[in-house]
Image (cartoon, rainbow, N blue to C red; front, side, top):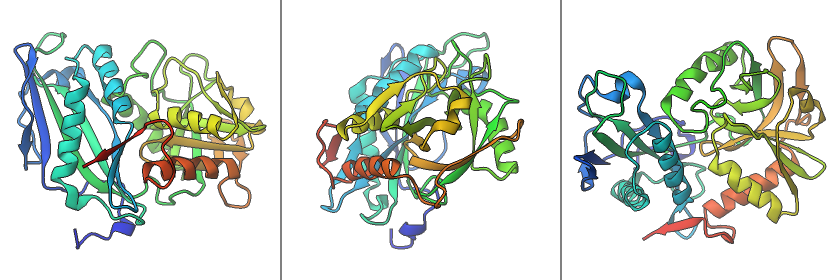
Length: 339
């Protein structure tokens, strides 16, 4: 689109031409339908509105230097959506239906895929929700699947530069044996209180500790946490953390680069021992962290003292982004080229 300033896009919603939809009814999924409307007609008793039967995914399409458009590990997003469906008792979406809907949405809106070299990408949002009417607390019998896309810039305005994070203790994002391992909207609603507290204090995002003991690091807002020391990539192991596909990919890349990898509980006190720390997820890929402030105790952990991301975080970031844009060889079969 000629009127879009590709290099200065926000991470926000911009209207595109089409979205793709599909309905589960009478025990089966229907055909994909194309819509140009940004709105959804929904029954006022839909389970998504009353009982939170809703799950979503976040993906990106990238235009490479060769002009080809690439999807990154769509199958992992599809599998994670299926896990969310199982977690909150929604009709499971077949992997091939997920793939076809995403590719169709990207192709229909090809003119909105940002050019190579702008730092922008096409964000893909698959959304599945209970659209059937129920008054009692029970799973719906009807579900609606929607895929829309929008061009986006960096998640943090600073891009790949250090951000400031605040530890919040007066709210929890999710609890063990709850829905933290599923990508459902309720987790994000639960995180808004901590997010706003962090923003009000001048920080980019909150860091949540485990709900039970407030001792171990869980997540950073909508992203996974990692720390680096002694050439080792360390990320939390917890029963209330969303399994990040970006984090999973970074673990593999770290091993490819000759780093050790540890997935284990990380106490807050260990923050002082890390050489580099960061947040990772689809939206930001990697956000290096320059400061972590425990708002309640007043303790501050500082990193990136020269104002620049650490060398290993930089290498991990450049490698993953290079694979996504087709600049670095895809050794693991992560990329799907859209013809």
